[in-house]
Length: 112
Length: 388
Ligand SMILES: Cc1cc2nc3c(=O)[nH]c(=O)nc-3n(C[C@H](O)[C@H](O)[C@H](O)COP(=O)(O)OP(=O)(O)OC[C@H]3O[C@@H](n4cnc5c(N)ncnc54)[C@H](O)[C@@H]3O)c2cc1C
Image (cartoon, rainbow over all chains, first blue to last red; front, side):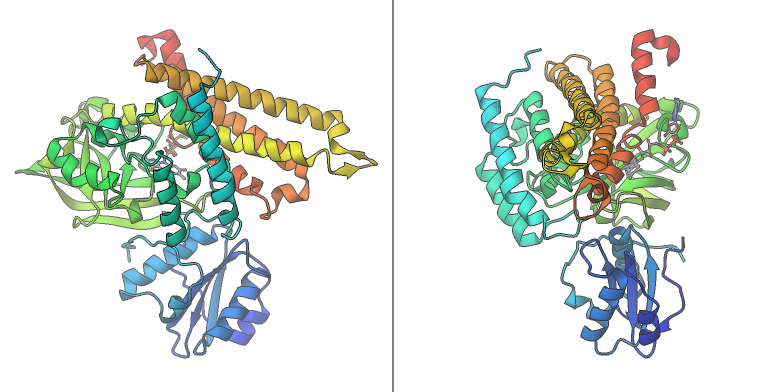
């Protein structure tokens, strides 16, 4: 499994239409395809990824694209994506201050 | 061995049970089913409570400020502390504090100042870095990470796999080969600060356990001062082994706690749930599952308390600890599996804790030495040195 989420970005409307109620992680990007939010659909999420992406894209005005990864290890994968973002950019994605369930993050230095 | 609780044990167990049921479980119901931490304010409030109870830092020796509670009682407490959804790997979400890495009690005064005391004050966290991609069951032979002396420093190159919590740690114990001709007598334990140049957490290793996950580490020309050697040069394996033996007792206790809770839930459910016009509890197939659970739990508990009792009395307890770990991890898996079966669809849903216990319990038969290695340890004790 690649460490970074490298799937192609999908325009929001089309991306949401293709989603179902799976558990997993997702990233939202702005019009320039810069990551603005990293989230997860966990065991308490209504309608899984579809529900979470729909809700967060409404909250984050500049979100324009989405990409997802279906995984039952959503919590460890979510933390990994957040730590990789910090390693790559020095900060969390701009909209992650909206996090309802902040989790303690560690420090990673992914290769490559 | 006397299996009756003393009035003091009874009181302490009752307090911990009440704490788990009235403080932990209600908070847990609002968390993600895989969560391994409480919101900071809740944790701080509950830490104050465990301090008021006189039970904070349970495993810290009294000489270092811990409550003076014997190992048998601490084992009984560990059984209670795990009786909730996150209980296997995050018992009570850390609100009882921890003693950190037990080997640090053997450290030099300077090392204690830099690592042990900050850990006991909750300011620093450590990881235990033994296993490598080349194998974890037989680390004495498998360790390939190398340390080479250069002046007052050692330069470490290599990597570790499966290391829990290294990304959130301030330091860790890293076992490296310092003499390639000496097998188990050629491994040294280094205390490594995680901000040392050349220390890298490369990735999370995603497993059945999303909470308290494992990581992969890489060391590139990582310089560690000789003053950070824990214990003696080339004697690191004894440190690792001692830790693994001791850790088997609380490891078993956690499995027993989860099994007790699962059985309690099943005992409550089966008289209420009806199929084919009669409660599940009236069916012999269900009764036998409950009976087998009870036997599994009792066997595990007695073996684990025996190991704790021997350790408390300063006797050799290697065989007993291996038996406790082997039996409790395997029995715990069977109990959770049977309870899932009795709950039907609900048993495998994230609405209830069984599915998390099922996943995490499976890891217990591998982590801290797989079942086969425990049998190997027991066989060695039975047959003597010829098997070494
Ligand atoms: C989630 C997780 C967290 C972990 N955290 C840590 C940590 O924090 N620090 C750390 O150092 N390690 C950690 N480990 C590593 C763990 O201790 C090892 O996975 C374990 O010791 C087994 O090593 P291995 O995976 O390399 O399997 P191997 O050593 O390759 O063994 C594979 C299998 O072979 C069998 N086997 C082995 N020896 C024998 C034998 N003599 N006879 C018969 N069969 C045998 C067993 O079934 C074993 O499962 C963690 C592991 C996991 C899964």
